Length: 144
Length: 289
Figure 1 (tube, one colour):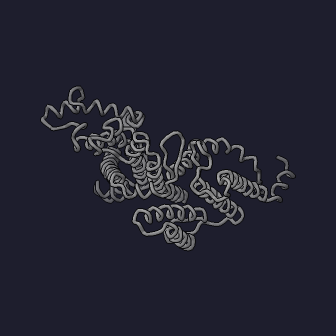
Figure 2: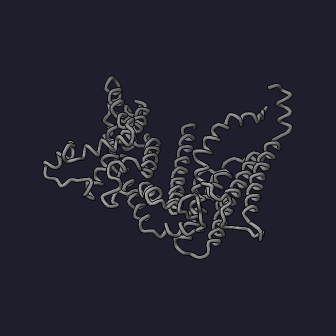
Figure 3: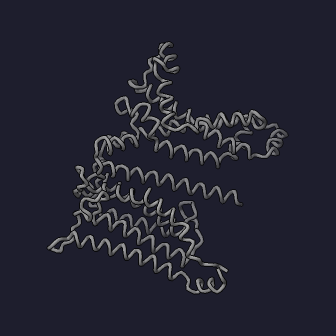
């Protein structure tokens, strides 16, 4: 690779890469939207429980599709953050050095267990488990 | 100067494709199945969180989990001290060191289903050496019918298969201790126990942590060996998590509950793997200092 080529790449920064990531994410969102609209039928209501690909073995439904889409979105945001604003790992209450990504991973894991505990112990409506998960995630990002 | 060449991404592409097909797409499918019900023919019906609620309240699932934890606990309690003991008594150098190393690694090279078959035959009272001997000694041993016989055999099988791993790791840890430490201990007239407690054990800490985590993770996911040996029986007494999972998913074709079950299983494995990762990176850092 020639020097000028390298220079050019550096001056561009990572914007091209970021744009590709975001664009990919938006394309996936558009695909989900397309299938959701196709499944909605004539009354145009959102079909939360209908199969997005009837007869397909992957058995997509809108809630799971949105779940993965949102997780992918979070990963895109954190990838961009990690490159744009690199950080040194810090030592928190967990006694381990964590970066932003580690804290996200820990938060997601805890969210999984909180939701299961909520369901298993019959603690009430499931959206409250999400609220609790967000509170804990806030704590993890602040103190872990 | 920092170069920034996006073409490197192309080199990762094969791995990404492989992981997508071997892990990401199946995982997504399992998530989809866990919120739906099916009667076959790729027809799915929404079930919401019902399967998760179902599994979390299922006695069968909790029983399998406790059995699993008991199994992992017992084999760790045997394999780790035994592995360390074996490593301490292995020859340090010379021809015998190599011979013992090869012999120790033999069980690790045997495929898991073969290990199961070996023990299945070994434990039979008509043609198996172990079963026949115990039978002749008057011990009531039958791993297909007795709860304790089945557990003892499954545990003995795992100990036979995997103690070598702990021993080899501990041996590697021991080999890395410089002679000067032992010389200093001799000058101080340290007892054998003191040498072990203050020199060998601290030096083996890293490899032993790795061994414990590896063995815990592997035993937590164990399937093939008990499946071949006992098939989860007698009754459900050796039905560990993965055996129960396969029974549910493939035996009963309850894809929804099995998917919910496996996602919870997956979460636990993720936590263990993460702890493993943290420990490994911390050990690397300590080595780097």
